Amino acid sequence: MKKIQLKQIAHARSGDKGDSSNVGLIAYKKEYYELICEKITPDAVKRHFKNICLGAVDRYEVPNLLALNFILHDSLGGGGTESLKNDAQGKTHGMGMLEMEIEVPDDFKI
Image (cartoon, rainbow, N blue to C red; front, side, top):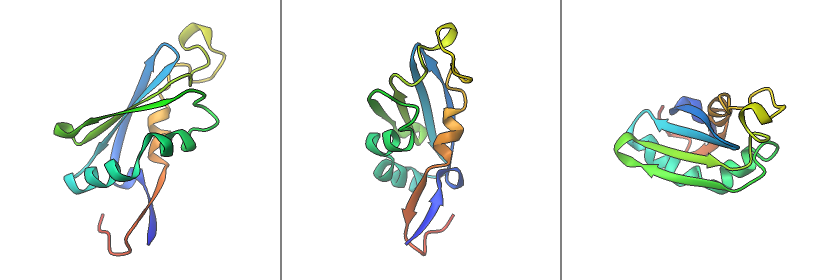
């Protein structure tokens, strides 16, 4: 097995709704989508953002777009004008998600 970063097989968009960050993870190919559906669980995302996301993580599948959408609850310090965080709208959370590493077989082709 080898490790790859999500940025090698997907791209992301992120933003906010109040105190929750909204991260869309979009696979480049169908086979990559199947892999991220298997590997990128709410628990995996919660562990990856353990210092940022204080609440639950919800996951929604959008197969026609080869995408997953994650809601990271209680991750923006109140959000918008209430937060003292540098990124009170969660704009960098998509890039943070793409830094996640997953294990794939040695013969996995990118």
